[in-house]
Length: 455
Image (tube, rainbow, N blue to C red):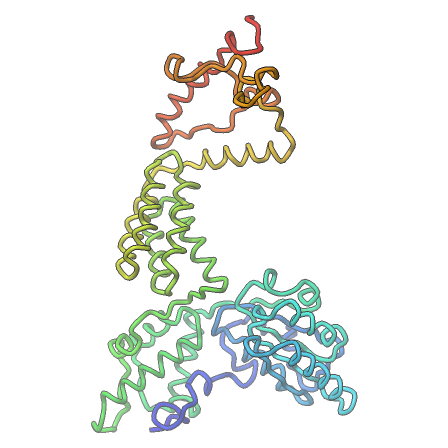
């Protein structure tokens, strides 16, 4: 059984064989493929470059970016050129532009340049695209899994139509699997996909068509191998158990360099901040299973301990630092146990960002020029001539004062009385609030402060 060149016979993957040949065959992306849409206009027969905008397709893997590019190029009278940002350099881009200009002037051919992974292009490489895009030598169709606002230069972005592709819905993936099982260029009916197996593949693919077809192909091969020389009166079934055995790990949509990387770590931190321990453990698991550097996770946990828990539970920072040290010492996979303990502690700890906010307010004052001179009684008095300048005069040694707090001014005159730190009512900060009230009451007793007269 050859199934159109896959499984037994050929090397062409099922995902490649099932690639849609036109926009009409694409599943999903209905918001971009309606009648009169820019993509429909670009892909219309005989459309030239006049009035045609270059497009940047932004979306997760397996949502049809390459397919859309080839469908646009498939219109009659067009030349299709494909470059990969991984291998192409500035010289390659300029050669394409020169050839496109010649094809237009000599033969009246429009060139569609498909550039995959444009986010990997340097600024110089992207600059080399501008003349062709500006002058209409090419219709650029660029694909990226990263936010173009951060990865594509502004001149190129402003001259292109940005289209956002969405993760495929479960129904879309199910339709794609059904097609792949029966169509001649797919599996041509050599296996029967059971409903439970279909649902398992859809779940594992997480909206990625390429992963769904890859999982189907692996499961189909396993089903055929298990059937062996059995009676072929009916195609062997692909069961949920076969899918689980063929695909030994969930196909996580987690790109360590792309948007998904930042989305997952953002959700992880926000779940800890929101005290949702179950969500925090979920996102931790996703990062671990995707091969994220455990040291990166540990660093983010340390930051969370200070930023989001702070003085509500000062022990959180100690636990986070200890977890980072332990992960360094023992490595993975055992390090996941340490990370889990730290995450559970942080997520269930009382929360306060008051120390962090206090610093931010102090920094804002400094940047605004609210600085002032250090009070004379606090200045360094250890160098020759300091005494003559009055440095250190009247300074009260805190350890000699009752309760270890001397009622003297520490802030510059311009900021005297400013309060940056306001404890919350959470956790350990309730005790800090009580003590701070007493401290500020003592410090506020200005009757004996240097440079102040009794009222």
